[in-house]
Image: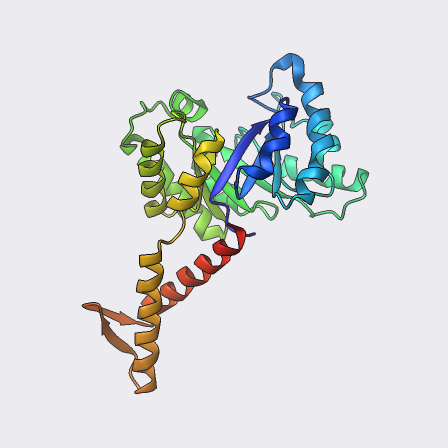
Length: 293
């Protein structure tokens, strides 16, 4: 799956907001049927989201949908309505462990079958919002349909309540489990995503948090407001200076190889095959991102 730097929630009950989505510039959107929708508006939101998917997909927008969950099951009504062409995946709220992801995968397969899609067409993105789901992050990431796992650490949110941490702007209280989620996702070959920055108008705070998350190994952020999209896209993209540095490293190493060497001093540092492999991946990632901006 292509990287997702900015993963923007849009309430499914706000039809006029959905019409504006292609202008936001988010790598992917999450049409939300869950927490951002009032209980009395669930049926209306489901109908609105189902009616907007084709339009959004035709505009080139990557579309995911977050569905509701009862005490026992994910919503089959939601799945039957939104598992249609144009939807890339389903965001799973509050899985308590891998067994919930297995259940959701079967339900998505049923919806794909009912709606004439090939089984396996859609991916899953579980959001780890309980201590138990974080403990089993690697098992969850290993599930075949799972393309990414999201570790949200919002102030006073579900994870804060479950884990018992007290939120700070510096984020040291969540560093241990965020790192654990990154390792779990990377070990399974899946994308680690984080968030949510709730002070949506504090763009500098968001920028610093996103840069810190990128240094940890995350590839993108769950977002709550369109104004946050360009800040996060920039934070998770290599800068021109970074690209120039790595392109220079590749050039210097290729020149050394032509002389029969497997290492070179570049910009004062020892560089060998391992470092150049990283450089090539970063340059390739930068080119891929430039095609989506």
